[in-house]
Image 1: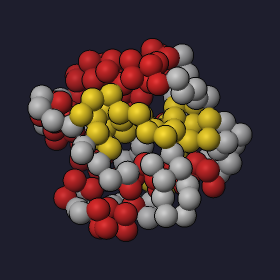
Image 2: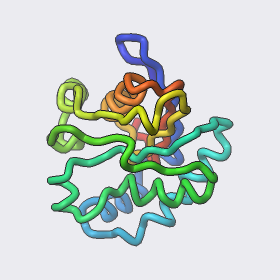
Image 3: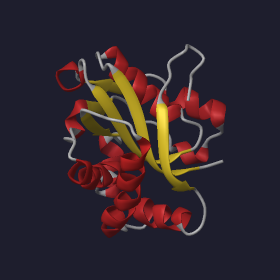
Length: 170
């Protein structure tokens, strides 16, 4: 995907966003289906292995501490741990933070999504400088979240940024 400012991030998605994956993601995120992390991550690990992309560090898209308290976990971080082991690339959840609370992207249109996540992330140069970063998230819809997180990684000195999602909405 390419943003208006020319920033480009290659995105690999394991499966289309439709039944039964849509229901599995909903259960995983909103119904306490924490045990779905390993089986869902297997799809993602396989997609990454087939992509031909290479990464030096895996960073899950962070959720705000308020949302993490509500949900009890970050679904992207849980999947990233499994992916890290499967593809032998270190995962660094502390490499990126969500610096402000945002509305749920799923409830917004494309323009609102972009505005909602603008400047919402900060990356730590100690983890990303001169490295190829693989961002991990559950669903790619408009790309707004991945693009903003990618911008934060690039601003902190990442040499390249790629993204891996479980599902991609059309």
